[in-house]
Length: 434
Image (cartoon, rainbow, N blue to C red; front, side, top):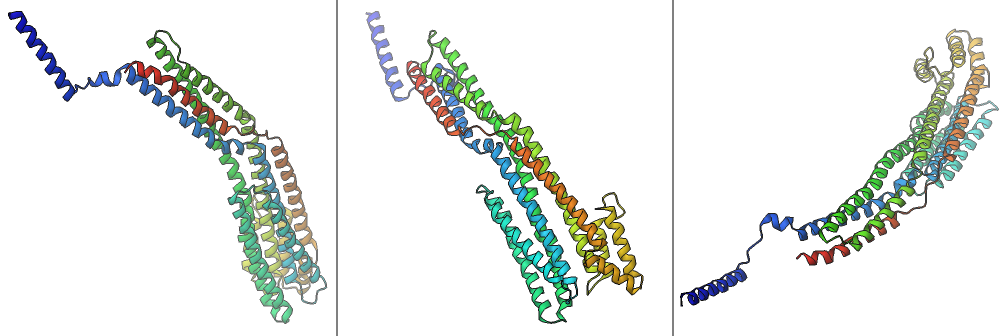
């Protein structure tokens, strides 16, 4: 009797406990909830999926940095700097011709020749600008640099045209026209040539940026697939032990796809070692061109000040100081020792008080005498130097390896396929342990 009663009580307790469990399910212990096999499968799948999605995104974003380290990028930089060199030299010729035109006496038969030289030089700059647009490769920053040069060239022309009109209107307008010419010459050196010079500095900056960005994206592109493989193999090994030595086909397929991603990534960056070293040579060559360009700018400034020293409305002290600022005579950085010597003889003649000496010195400057010949000699030397540097830049660019065909989208597709295969492989195992 007592045994029957005990059985009834136990049955009722079990029924009540079952009813309570239905009303208020007992949560498993936190450590068990997050540390069980099913939870670990979920965590592993989430980590694999996240890593492979990031790998796909990096594969797409790395397309541009990888291409920037190829031959085409170096060729574009070489063409832009060559166009800049051409424009710089033509603008130097235009400034020299304009200064000579405005400082020569109105009755000089050589004035039309110098005016024609100015017009031909600026027309050549127009042609160089038009050719350079084709080398921008759709780069908005390059287009903006060229547009700045075009705008300032137009401003320079406007000032020169106004000065020419004043000079032609009246004889008394010569002094005003000479003042206009000074403004135009200063604008050309301070604004227009500076804008052209930025074509060099910007190309150098792009090459430096391409190398630094390439290192970052190379590291990310290679290390991520390696990390993916480590996680996939670790998860496969753990699941292999937990499921009685059965390989997970989904994880295996994901591992193979990720290995292919790694192989394609290494191939897509295979040009990096050679390109990185060669791009440094291109960068150095462009910097050398820029250094010569600065010497030409100083020579141009010195020549302009010498023209103005013998002009119709001179300010000798100011022009002499600006000449010295440009030529840096008496220093290790002097633009040319013979130019400085010839200029000193000019200044001595201008300050001698002897009209014959002054006239002879002025003739030398304005009519192709010793002073002009020295400037022409140095300009020819610098022109030959920058031509050689342009050729060296082209040679370094030609030696750049071509970037392999773009595979970024293939990498992304494979990485996403690997993620899908891994998740598909883990789902049945997750169901077994729930």
